[in-house]
Length: 184
DNA sequence: TAAGTGATTAGC
DNA sequence: CTAATCACTTAT
Image (cartoon, rainbow, N blue to C red; front, side, top):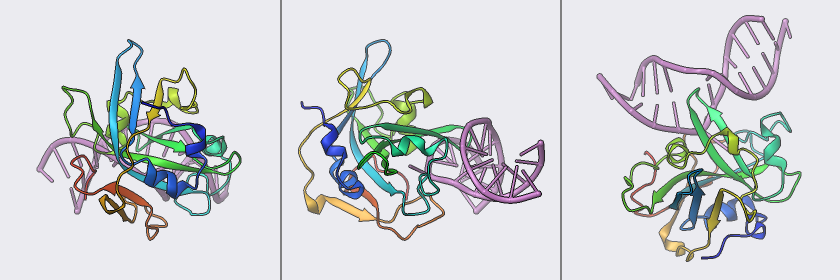
């Protein structure tokens, strides 16, 4: 399988969000174990809309969003959870795709263990230590492998969930009938 | 539906 | 410094 290049993430954020569906996210743990999961749900965030962390400019937390495409953005929320995003478009523009759910491909994995943005991070052992890494780097501990594109009719596009601002934007994508898609 | 939980941010 | 907010999950 081929690792996705930086070029893939340099497309428009909503395009990346949509095309990431069906791709395989891989995580190499410190003991050498490699976990894999199919991405089944994503959301797009760009700096023009107020629900994005980059909306107010380069704050200390959001600075990572302005880096080059393919950078991993991990943030801590509600005192207990991490969420991971992949930075998109060009350097200096704050945008990213939130990974909301994956379907674990490891043999003994529970299919519900990664059906939510914070659960997915827990499953893949993603913490703030990984904030800012380049997932297109050859030696990265997280990367995404290419896979067949999901057919247009299998992709559902709806409004984003769990946010309080700019709710009307239809920037959430998931695979129809995907068993690991998050709540609601 | 409610509440736990602490980093981040804006506003004094 | 303080207080409000938060792209969530789990258990009622």
